[in-house]
Length: 348
Image (cartoon, rainbow, N blue to C red; front, side):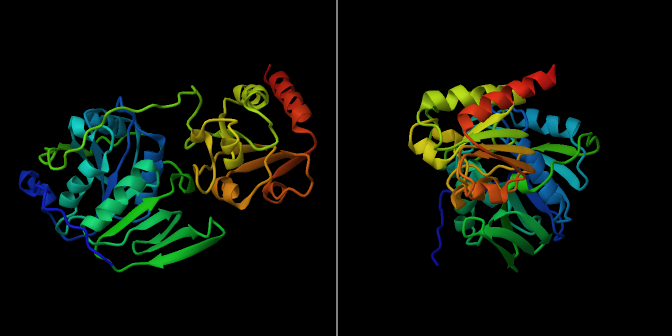
């Protein structure tokens, strides 16, 4: 084991309100994500539900120039038992969740005995921040938690989701990333009595890193991580045109997100942002329609927790049928258009 230290971290604790230097009781710090305009990311509501299972008072942390918007939105729209405080750190350098900027901030917040747990989602943001934070405080994180059995006992998948490992830790600081799809969302309501506290960000020049730009694929569809329904395609489609021709109308009538297997992405049928599986996105929608995909273990690792799985495939021995709630055996190029039309007729 090696230790990564930083001499550039500037202390924030002297700038924090007196309430931060409080008791040694167990408490949870949860970093909630927002969109660039400050709207709550749906995964943050699942994260709060996971944090509640730790049975500690929860401090919700928002960072970035629109952090106040996210904090007020949480207070006005969510009823979260155990939420004791909302902390806001406003600064332009925190807008894109750059781990080089956020990790030193978290190090300072986690100093002392105020917090016993830190939780973040297993999103790209969480996967960037948590390892760096763990190295800075010389701690072992528990990643991709799918079940919380107690304040020191957690369950996470291993071997591409084919097995579950139960982990117990006695570290004084428990650093967790949770799989949002494994937890329900907190209920709607209001948290009127929760205080919003703004603290300064004083170490923004500690690491010379700047955000330049991002090239994002905008589909106008529900994000795969929060979509209630997903239509996913595999190698049964021979080209990008047929992939879009058959899946897009079905997704449209269901107001669904569109996903794909790695094989479909590698064959150029769609953008890699649509990939679902071990090396893609982990999803758990209410309805998952698997069209022309075999059900390789790597893909199943990303969607097997879906509520209802409908498989359409011409191979009766395809592994996907073993994991499907309903199966349609036949030519996807004939079944999908017919299914689309029948759904349209039923909606009239």
